[in-house]
Length: 96
Image 1 (cartoon, one colour):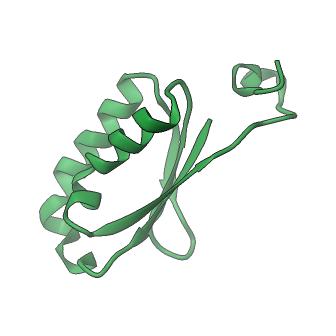
Image 2 (image 1 turned 45 degrees about the vertical axis):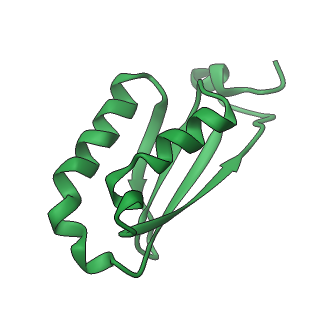
Image 3 (image 1 turned 45 degrees about the horizontal axis):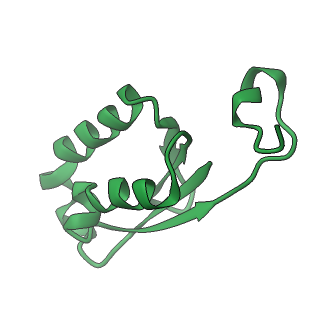
């Protein structure tokens, strides 16, 4: 599983011109079944919880985000291993 942090970059002001492409990129990740949860950070920017691809594939997917390509955000990709999850999210449990 990966947690992806998208923090505003030096080209933050150009976000509106890339927003539709960024939203399409998110929708593709969700429809592919890779993005499990997408949202905003209280400090600005966003986060994604991703599951179902290896580290290289996730990093390639993130690099293709129009916001990343145009330096609207910088991405930090963290690989995490879950140890305890609620039953509804058991498929995310790395310990199984």
